Length: 467
Image (cartoon, rainbow, N blue to C red; front, side, top):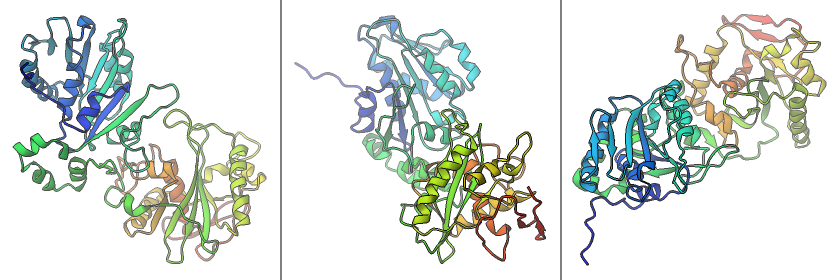
């Protein structure tokens, strides 16, 4: 019996894993040149001719219409050879097979574009270059169309991308990529959501490309942009494109494994309060050489992005106090504990948030948050990172997630953007700027009502009013 004429075969490694993946949602991510587009097309094509007929419908999306040209061209390269009886409709941008299967090439940029497809059934959904989308709202909304009334029909969402692009951060977060995430190939299961997985692809797997274009790797190595080079050559998700701390952040340098903090080091804590939005408490320590370590965090994040746990202040204070009762037995003595000054306001309440914490045994002093404090704090964080004087324990997941991802302010490039998820970064800023309080001494946290001696934007000493 003659051997079959094989026109396309998946490469060992990521392409094979992607095509055989049983998980509902799968992302094929990694370096340039790994053969991701081919794998995406074949993910749909492998189910053609399996008896599903007109019920096997797929829609492959790009962000814009012009971006579809490349993937359409590649589909013609393969499908005309593999399926000689299939027909491509140039006006409708769709493939149709003799048994009725259909693959549509479409685009959608924003969440409202979903309504162009509301009520449709696509048991196969594909998204090429997922990091081109700044938000995943359209991507997530389209999941509702991944359905079929036909019994036994496979249903799947498939996507590809490299690191880099405007959607780098949201894709990284969804699939838990990079430092602090999960290992590639780990199935992510979250309550109320279908399982998803990221499969890592590398150019070294694509032996066909490397044989036909041996200079391709050198082309990537010659890239001048260090972030683009890390993304496209190494598939590195720890880059932060356009981030405020992009040029100084290095996870290998700034993230350390936990170790016991010596009790003779200076230790203190800082807090950015939140109820509807997340709160963040950070514990800081300084070694004899002046290096600051962030060695513990308490983060109040709700189920939805940007939402807080809505815990009352006394409950959060009890958590903090319980932690510090243990610390006190180990000999830690907390000094100059700083929080957003807004917690000392009594507007509309009998007691301020600061007073509630104090009643539970946790005392705060107002952090420096006057005019210019965000810009000055931003520059101080930048300096500490650049000089290697700021280290973060790997257990501080939310600070590690948000600090390197935060962008610059649209109107003032000298400071970070305080309109996003800045809760952990704000708490960190309060902590590292503690010398803006009383420069002559680092006393233990006094009563929240005790006036604080601070320095304003111009270096003038002033007294905080009673609260």
